[in-house]
Image: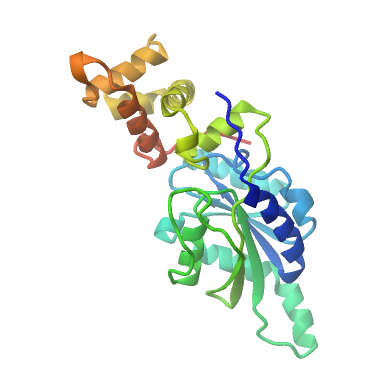
Length: 280
């Protein structure tokens, strides 16, 4: 399954981030907690340099508890602060603000010695499309300041947004890299909705997802769809799910498009279970 997507505005975004880096004190790198490797831009280390950074693992309510703990330990070992966030339900947001203030404590003290008080901490948020950036910004700012939508790539230009805790945020559009050299990375992004569905073959995607879940979370599949997957092919499993969900068309034929959409939607909304697709 060949996935290759790099809209032109993303190249401009990388240039914009480099240009605006001098305006900010801290970087918020927003990742999908289910796929922290696949949702990280590989260029981010070279772009950001030694600028203080907080990794925000969003959608942590959809990823496994065990996976969340392993990823937090991984970033701690690298000397990078990380926070588990569920931006839809406002969980973990105060910790983002607290860590920001902690990381900037020394700089604030230097400014106070120069007589500069209450200078807001300026942050920049970067992340791939549809990782929940706009929802996070709205939750941190307490207002509907950023456009949201579950269509990836809705944020187009830079804007400064006042946050709680004397913070100001420079929003940037999502960035993605030019090509996925590892097919599993492209698939992970497609599974989680970071790539527009209209660019994908939804049936192939659902089959690939079922294959992955058979390897990693077989019990979740059986429990969700009330099926037995033992010694069955992916095709047979999808067929069983379709029968149990009433995805039958004319002449008793399986409606694979309908069942594929159900499987993908159930995964993205956490109905199959809390799933982490990548571990450190």
